[in-house]
Image 1: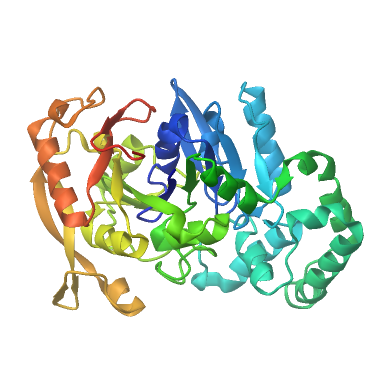
Image 2: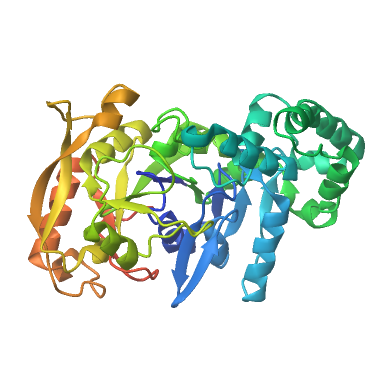
Amino acid sequence: MPAIVVVGAQWGDEGKGKAVDLLGGRVDYVVKPNGGNNAGHTVVVGGEKYELKLLPAGILSPNVTPVIGNGVVINLEALFEEIDGLAARGADTSRLLVSANAHLVAPFHQTMDKVTERFLGKRAIGTTGRGIGPAYMDKIGRLGIRVQDVFDESILRQKVEGSLRQKNELLVKLYNRRSVDIEETVAYFRSFADRLGPMMVDTTHVLNNALDAGKVVLMEGGQATFLDVDHGTYPFVTSSNPTAGGASVGSGIGPTRIDRVVGIIKAYTTRVGAGPFPTELFDEMGTRLQQTGGEYGVNTGRPRRCGWYDAVLARQASRINGFTDYFLTKLDVLTGIDRIPVCVAYDVDGVRQDEMPVTQTEFHHAKPVFEYFDGWTEDISGARSLADLPANARAYVSALEAMSGTRFSAIGVGPDREQTIVVHDLIG
């Protein structure tokens, strides 16, 4: 049975949560393979909005086992706050499994994130301040603290001490902050042991055994392709690999076991935080997209920068991830716009480039080359097939598909789970 990867194809916030939730009734396991509580999914079920951060979107689907994979960095306090919040609304979170190898975000990681971001001044990346980058730095530096360490106080203390040795020097001598107490940090992590214990498993064995047994496993990448630390708009990226390859590493499911890779892409483009954005709008139309699309960060509430659809980005994302399908979201947000521009190439210092520029400098200087499409005024929120769409909306979708390098298999026409046009089965 298939392993399926769902990946954001832009800079995040494309609607991955809706896509995963839509498929949730047909899969057995939903895995979060990367990131932390620095990015979230918004899922609307029966008119009720759920904002998920660390928890996989599949947690809202009955009979699905949600899994936090080894590639995630977990803030335990945030995790249990999220679990308790869902439980208070009647959601069943008892099936959640957490990888023993996932790394943990300590309070001192959040402190380091905030002080170093301030220290960068004009060169600040625009992080959420949630400690994600410093936690991944410790992981790569082999100073990380993992889920399994919470249950061995001696090892936990050694790892906390090792991680804090340099950080306390920096906090006191460079940033003029107080040093972090080792014993307080150990006690902080140990306080979660009782609740965390029943969730901890070897998720690699669980997921591969599930595939062997004919179960369907879906992996939902956090963030998105152009926030990938290797393939994104570096240095304005996240600290992990939220691409299809990263999903394999962050779950322990080998790449040959992945059958479908679904890219989630908006009918326009948004971005949170700093970094280049060729199609960004600074006028009333940008404000209209922001307000109509509800473009505010799930975690931070920060307004998202808004711009037109970028087909150059879409083609590059398709190559990097090996997409088999695209899920186009938020088509309804464009209703009522007379003429809709689409970026088909870039102008870089007077030279047309039809694909992504090679260098950071060129991409910073890239200006969009637009083609224009007639808009529509009809309400499309009730459409359930392509034939239900107005002619101009169908033409817009068809043009985007031709430009983007991958077939469009689903189209979102509203925020609710049911407001989706399914063109091709995303699982079968």
